[in-house]
Amino acid sequence: MESGTTTITTVDHDDDHDHGGGTAISDVHQDVIKTHILTRLDGATLASASCASSHLHALSTEEQLWREICSSAWPSIDHPRVRHVISSFPGGYRSFFSYSFPLLHHRSPPKHHHHYLAEIISAVDVHYKASLIFSKVQENETKSDWFLCSPFRFDLLGQKESVQTPIRHVGEDQAWLDHLEENLKLSWILIDPTGNRAVNVSSRSPVSVQHHWLTGDVQLRYSTVVSGGEDSSELVHCAVVVTCEGKVGGEMHVREVSMQVEDLEGKHLNGKDSLVILQGAMESGKRKKERKGEGKERFEEFLKMKGERKERKQRRERALDMACIATGLTIFVAFWSFILFR
Image (cartoon, rainbow, N blue to C red; front, side, top):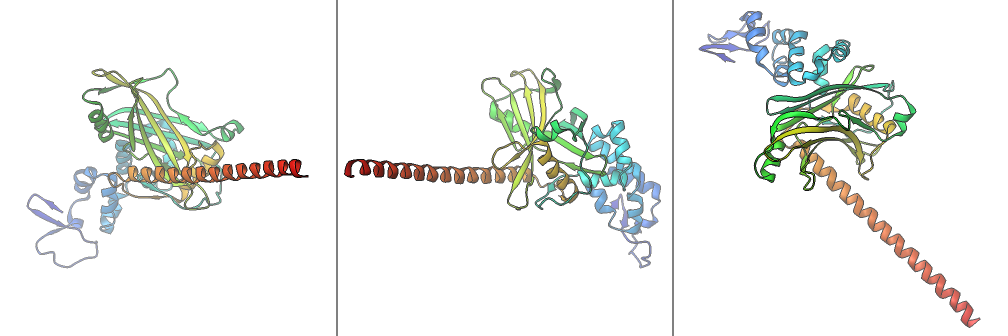
């Protein structure tokens, strides 16, 4: 890397070759590297830098460095309960970042789990441009019969609650919706405090933005598509919904932030089935840097598969209806033939 007119060459400690007048990274004081270089990197870049040399790897694994990176990306994790849980992770904040950094890619069938989720902690942050407009940590117990049998749903706001934001509703409808799609980012991290695992189930950017013509509400949907059964083609999506209200020219208020799990039939899964899927994603899902628009592409692929399945189901139902009608006509004709010609 270059700093001013001094060339700094990234090498390992044991490399004694001549560097052509350049300065090896190991020759730079570690305080300079930690204070003026590593602190300027985001988590993904820091992880890459740690692989460049053993010297950088040693400096890049400091807990405080990763804590600042995680807290900057996800302010909600500064909650005392979340800090306590992260401290029990094998690699602390570094492990938490590796689990929570999007994009989640999970298409493997569920495996046998060593423990069952008795509690899930949600750490949710919503940013508009560079400003944090909503941040909350919510703890949900997941072992009651009511939770396991009821449709899975996490709501972060009550029916009469709303959060004021600095967002102003301006411009034409479509241009305004495009603006929100570009600038309203969301992170929803689910944390297993017992298994020391975490997963980010949000696509970060909305996969769809819709304006309700009657109420004026704007609904933004974030989605992560994951495996939902033994067959790799059986998919579900974690649907995160943010609903904003506000008149043109006025400030927008967030009045809904919720999450559900939906399958290809359009059915919302219950708590028990959702926990199996989410735990599988936490333990087996791959994490990688999200390519722009990748989350939306996966969601559109999910919708296409959902539409194809619906069409196949309708064709089967029509064929069954025709078979029932044909059977009925056959019985009717046979009955009257027996009556008339006996």
